[in-house]
Length: 93
Ligand SMILES: [Ca+2]
Ligand SMILES: [Ca+2]
Image (cartoon, rainbow, N blue to C red):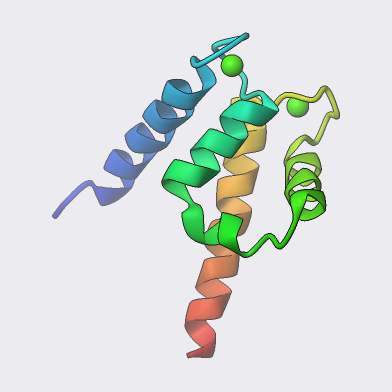
């Protein structure tokens, strides 16, 4: 399949918009929206968090400017960091 990366970029944008538009500002993710996104799109990462404290920590780590919402840039940093982490994990096998 050609244009996998372009497809992935479109999917990233569409996924962000889908969850960001659920409540409040349609251009940012609230804590609830981030939780929905993790539950439905990244369940393995949520299972890795043992308690509410770790989930809160995850959200704080995503929110670079500390305004309690996750914008697209912050979302992309998170996706990039998780992808790099997954890549490192892959190379250890
Ligand atoms: Ca929103
Ligand atoms: Ca933010």
